[in-house]
Amino acid sequence: MIGLIQRVTHAHVSVDEQIIGQINKGTVLLLGVEKLDTTENMKLLAKKVANFRMFEDENGKMNKSLLDIEGQLLVVSQFTLVADTHKGNRPGFSNGASPEHGLAMYESFIAHFEAEYLPCQSGRFGANMQVALVNDGPATFTIKV
Image (cartoon, rainbow, N blue to C red; front, side):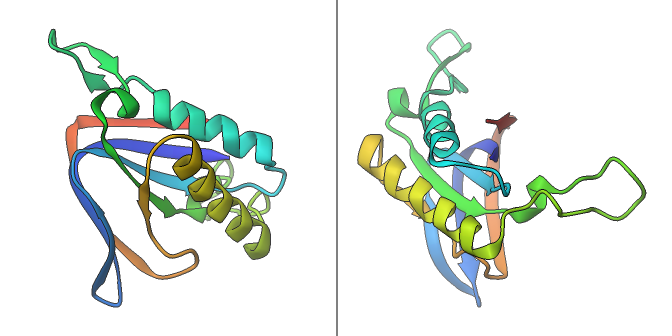
């Protein structure tokens, strides 16, 4: 499971020109699911996203987590994160989850995050989405579990 997290001042995701999820200060998570990902991977990523210290404290140091600032989370499925880009100029997706497994892990991540940490907003799995955000910093990190 791969997560690309971005610290944002605000963000939203749209499908067919309709906003379906939006947040203010917090984190956008682009979530890529691989075929061998398990519930344990999902829980580890959720814990890392909730507790990852990417927000500044009173001294300007990255010492605060999403939980510490009581921020918001926007989760967007992003299968291209699992692409193999080592050879050639065309990405390979053989490590990607099947659509069924990807959807199950995506929905499980959202349900688990909301049950254990904070409410969150989300995109629509498999849809053509437009994501708009203001990356604060910019601060962007890749997390692989």
